[in-house]
Amino acid sequence: MKHLTDPVFPEGFLWGASSSAWQVEGGVAEGGRVPSVIDENSKTKKPFADDSITADHFHHYKEDVALMKQCGFTSYRFALAWPRIMSAPHTVNPQGIAFYDDLINELVDAGITPIVTLYHYDLPMWAYDMGGWGTREIIDEFDFYVRTCFEHYGDRVKYWLALNEQNMQIIYGEHLGVARGVRDWFKDKWHINHIMNMCHCHAVIACHDMVPGGKIGPVPGYVPIYPATGNPQDQIAAMNAEELTEKVWNDFDVFREYNTFIQKYWRENDIDPGIMDGDMEYAKDAKIDFIAVNCYRSDMGKQPVPGINRDLKFAHMGTRGEMVYSNYEGIYALDRNPYVERTDWDWHIDPVSMRYALRYMWDHYHLPMVITEAGFGAHEDLGPDGQIHDPYRIDYLRDYIYNVGLAIEDGVEVFGFNPWSFTDLLSTGNGMAKRYGLVFVNTTDDDVRDLRRVPKDSYYWYSKLIKSNGREWGKDMTEWRDFTKQFPRASDAD
Ligand code: BG6
Image (cartoon, protein in one colour):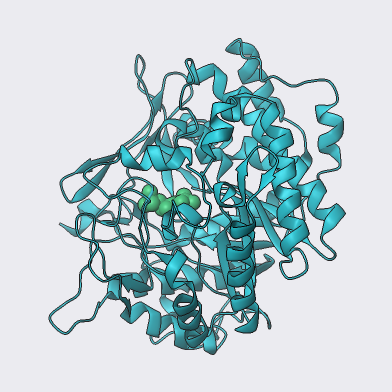
């Protein structure tokens, strides 16, 4: 079948970008914000900066929204900070409420639809001291917090996201601060996961109770996993990896049940996930409306090596990153894919993974989707002309967005694209050194500088594309339809 035209994006498609509170705001001791676990966690990431200043969006939000408007944004995905809104158990901070009121008003006045995450890794320290994600008391606190948000912002915010990348928080709990203070992470993470699931359910139910016309969904961090070879055992390993890194979460969010794979896994490993009477009945009413997909890259699954049990690590080597791939005896291993390029930080660049992710999720769950993250992390600084020329990011975004278009053409329902990130902001593990923004922020890990905003070349390219609703690519994109020319193995190119 020959396609002669580029894919068509639906009218009203939400074009924007993405951020999270602790990664972009700074101002951690201002406006009544109380300390968070993530403040401590980010301090341990030296030689990189912590979250105390980052892009200083707390003081620059008006300027940032003006730049979004100028770019042509119709959406902005950002997070509310629990420690800014709730200063203590069941205690609302009016200054925190006012800050987000102003930000939301600024967005709405600019014609930008807010897509709001309720939780993106910044657990208040007071909640951690209560027992954090390991105690069921947090469910009630979270319920109070989300109801506060719905009450204050539900008139203007209709798209809500519950917990950012719960799957990644459970898989990489130590890196993201969830595992702090937990003794046996291998077993206890499933107990924590169930508590998070109940929090997710409370958010879904409260949103539907309180927000007229409100829609809410989860935000999986989706990394498609391809089998390394045609060896049938590699296929099963890839499926096992898929289960234990994403499907268990997606199945729960959509079907509100634990799938049979994870039940067998818990039995075999003598794990009690801590399900209490009434939990599963409660979950039944937590019917999500859509799925927000974060997809940056793919991985490759293969038969594991016996005798090794190792988690995936994002190791930092000087100015570069290097992935150390996981290996779980008898279950699966992940590996580098020789068919795709990699960023400076060793993340696979794989635009087809976006089409794959959308097709896979649609086939399994049949729910509308919005892209809430994808992006290219790079080392960058102002050039002699005072600008940032980032053709690699333009290529990345163009190819990923085109593949969203192909997925739409394949029949998948997608209603928006919000790459990571609008401005440069703090990376989860690599400070300001790893930049994702469409807009450069003039600050570094060891020198705050003047925090000036400088739109990168990708900002201007993205602006043209989104103002034309996905028609102005600036390049012939039809190569994406040619199956015979793509992806030579890195070794074949030598
Ligand atoms: C996503 C997270 O998984 O990846 C973001 O939701 C994060 O918070 C992004 O910043 C990129 O990861 P990193 O480690 O490069 O910052």
